[in-house]
Length: 304
Ligand code: ATP
Image (tube, rainbow, N blue to C red; front, top):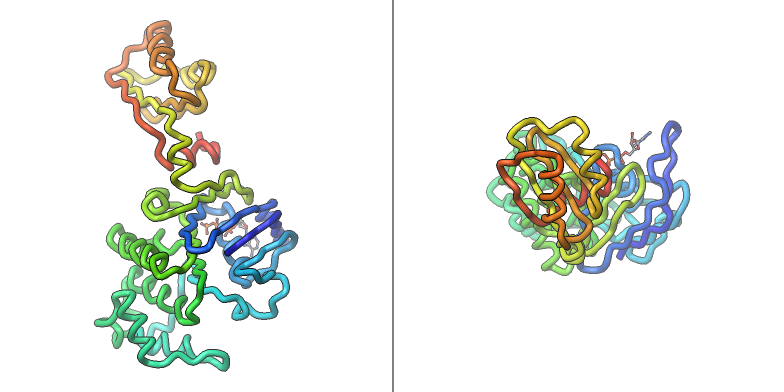
């Protein structure tokens, strides 16, 4: 549904995208993860036809985004990071306004159906200015569905919401998939991606550092992490020393907890216990767990 090859974007003062490759398959939910400033919005704006690539190929539903004259030529629905609506219009009037142009006519029945679908039937005649952020996001999703697109591009649809609002938006994204739509959405909330995505793409500093089906990622990373809780603060050189142990990939120290990530499970715990006894370090807890997406993310974007 989307194929991006070697995508670069230069702004006057920055090189925001440095050779992005990504592939979104038909019917899947693709989670596009990255920290602030990684390049998510820049990429999604290009995919939505709102910004021009400096270099590289972007095929969206078979259409080369460089060749379009207007974003409406792409068969997509787009939800910007912070959708803005006229506060004095009601939800119904908002969709009627957005859904009716020279090119498109959306009737009242469809508008009511969309409002019902996003759970805003009862609020349909209330002014949008009084809507919570969650309601505004759901109205934004309804607006993105107005052109009946096959593909939805959602920029941080859940990031600014409370847990309840986030859960509602994630449910809607799952429902979109059940309707046969393809969805790409950006976020920095990793648990959201773990809850609903088929494929995960991680972007850091304008480069894709990983793209994989979530299941494969979870399977690949069945290598262990050990969380060790020390009785005293860890000695200063502990991180460097642990990193020198064979098979240790990543070490994170947070207060008295040291999290040690191994590349393989074999004898990892024994190696770690030998290390602790050699160094004369006492621990109150020695816990083995599997990687979470957060661990993988931290490792791939090399945050220490
Ligand atoms: P956030 O989660 O904060 O929205 P993001 O991953 O969406 O972050 P982008 O907004 O795509 O990141 O920004 C990527 C980089 O490009 C940043 O360094 C940003 O400062 C830069 N950038 C984005 N838009 C412009 C612009 N119009 N002019 C100059 N630089 C820009």
